[in-house]
Image (tube, rainbow, N blue to C red; front, side, top):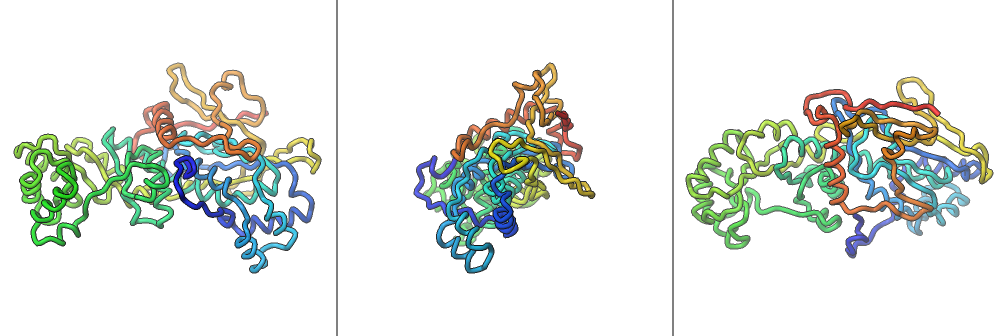
Length: 444
């Protein structure tokens, strides 16, 4: 959901300079040659999943739509381009009136994807589509990496709540995007207030070790927190001695204490000990939250522990070892001439080294078996086989320059859960493996 959808009074700056210089120099040369206005089709896709991953997660689509809508070359931007002599005056004049007027199709946000999946298809003139390359890839590569990590962690958590706490481990703006992507992948809340403000995410947070250290005694700190935030708060119990802190926490808050948080030590052992201690003290409904450099493997190792929720930071916002998805944005078709009715001609890179691409404006569908479980990602540029017409994946996102594909984040999040559930069971294994679905190309 965009800021505008939430009715929030946030100024949205131009996204036009989230652009590599060579996009504008290509534009200048194409304007000069006359080819800039040829109808063109670009596609964003990845040639492979990050090593060991079995599926990818589409995330950031809503942010891409915002970026396209706000891709405007205003006065200060044009002044910068002129001052730095990035492009000539004729190109500056063209950029001053830039508005994307084409169409965009894509996998709906939250959907899973595989190598070759045409995640985003941008159709328009070469000039208006080529300049979107960097901002599209920047958003999709980052957000999809975070959402994929979040999805794996959600699987490992087995239905227990996950809280995103990674703002201090990444760039301040990336942190807001990461919170959104984590929510798409299955997290329930975030510590990041900017993400809560901008995207309406549920936010959480109580206190850190500094609050306990500030007070003369741990009991004094707990008392101050409970008096301020109520008995349902979460008390951090590992500043000094965990057992003593749990005893003090229940003494101060009573059995109505909401939660205790453990942020260090042997989490498996401590969780069992703390659960037993809480039960013995009569705080049977007090929950246990664990944090401390968790990733999907650490979360999975705690599956049998009496843990009620997990807080995850560093590993999540860095994609759990895969901070990007290696997505590319390639021209796959262009008009045979500048004539408005010229037919589209497939084009593709054929260089050596594994960086080839498949030409043609493509469709994608997911074939399922008799039980409704996905068995292949099918991609083609010709007619869609009749049995796959109802299984097509691309949906309209922009039509004639108008945004038509915005969705609420809860819709996106629910879609991901359903999409992941439709994959073979091996998709949820944390062990390294190949993509769980093969990609099949259908020739025209």
